[in-house]
Length: 200
Image (cartoon, rainbow, N blue to C red; front, top):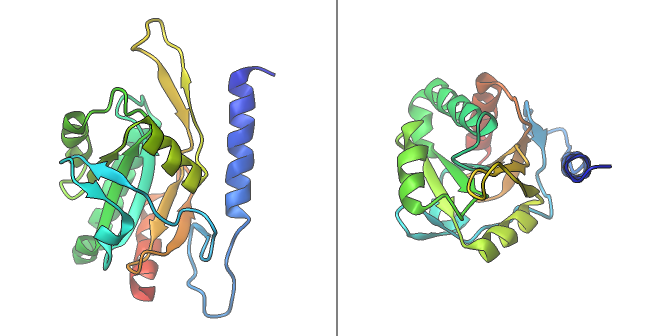
């Protein structure tokens, strides 16, 4: 099996394991995504935002937080997901001001704070980019059980990055509640954010 196929198989396994941790109960919110309330992963992060300010989940307490991992030179998945999140924010109307979307780069080598500051808010001015050094990126990837791997390009600087493409949704108390799989529709994400805002 090639390294790429091995990576994709591991990614599928990790995603399946994450989705297996679904919460249940008669009073649980009915999410369109996977309910991961009570999961033992995705508890926090320690990264800097695109202004250089150190950030953790506690900085966004009182808001629902949407966290997505990607990189600015991603050709399709990342811009599509950010556009989907921007559309979900539009559907939320006034409730969108109670939501913080965060885009954490898995390519800190190329994704400088300046580049994130230009790229991420272009989808919605309220969106923020996050980055860390290589060690911080590895640490947050381990905490959220995401996988990322460089794929060499024609030159050292034209590599791409295979990475997990799901979305993590936290309630206003900072608890991980929902995992939205890649390709989730804007209306489904908006629905889940409304549920999370009600429960928080």
